[in-house]
Length: 292
Length: 271
Image (cartoon, rainbow over all chains, first blue to last red; front, side, top):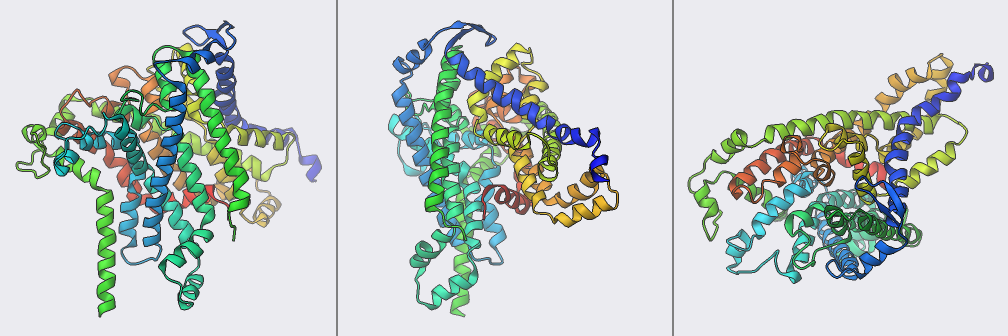
């Protein structure tokens, strides 16, 4: 009866089921993506409508721009990504390692460690800005210093990274915790019996066995650092002197100034950077990650 | 006895570490209860002398914080259920049906995940301008009605369910949509709850997109609204408003943390 009963209704049912998702993806992901590429080589009106081809005019503009130095922007973006993932990974890793073993209070400190992920980056930035304020801010009062935490080009990028790492901490911590906990107690006890110390256990057993999670956390942090906007916008506005101006901030800044086509060029660059990193992730995963 | 002692110290240290991480939020709460004079005193001091509710009173009396909250909840009220339902439906099609072009469409969806929302955001903004949707709920909603990530997560979950269940139900004459609503959805309950919580918090916390498409004060969402207070008000008021806004996701997170972390790890890492 099966074949005959497969009526028209049944044939179109799966298409109806996937229709909303496909429509939205086509309209709000693929279409604007293609349009972004086209617009980066065109002159457009204020509604983004196509007027005429412009060749590489806008690409030259962003590369040659003096006020919003492209090379510096790409460097800042990469430096920021590296800083962010190093800080997040090391802190989250230490916390996860310390709390791998379940105890009666684990629930409490797990919640405390993971809570930053519920805090919006806008909220976090407002609070941190208050702490880092140079005039009468809390940190300067405590240290008895007068440091321009957010206005010194050398320091500001560190501060933005610290705040971003704080925001990403909870997410990474939960992943690493799940990874470390997946290492069975037997394996660990066997290691202890064999006389393996804390460090040997961490580097020879826990880290290799949790490598899928570690790997995932590293790349998630790199990619979300590349896409970071809010912290930069609220803490430094890309300044001082462009020291915290990443690609993502550059995109917003160009758009804000009404230079949509230039914003499109930068968007494509951001896409390519993220794409490249995802490829690296994909290719290196096979070599580096140990699946149980 | 000594071992017990050591253990207690270790536990206490972990709690202290947790409190250190939470320190920015503690500072926020303390400052929110400070009278203006203490907030503005230089050098600023955390010890509070005359705790007051003035800042909170000001926030609710003179600022549009309740409007911001209302706007945010309108967006969440539409986006979160629609995201979950559309993802479940698509996941159902991809895990239980064979149909022409299935592989191609699935690959296209996978590819769409390679395009970050941030990359197409400026063009999306132009589309919203073109459609004259600036400063409307529609602009906040339409671009976030679907989550491809959730489709994959639910599909994974559905594929892991025993096939015999489906065959038995079909044998008993259970219709396709009946199977979906009365068997499949209840079986995916844990992940649905995880997804709702995550999507709720994510939407509540989003900043860049609302910042771009909303320009009038009465249409702002919470994050944009509160962020726009800095500079216009003294820090006591700003932090009081921030604290009010923060309560909801933090409570949701504390009560739903197990579910959230389950949902996070379910979709992301193969094992």
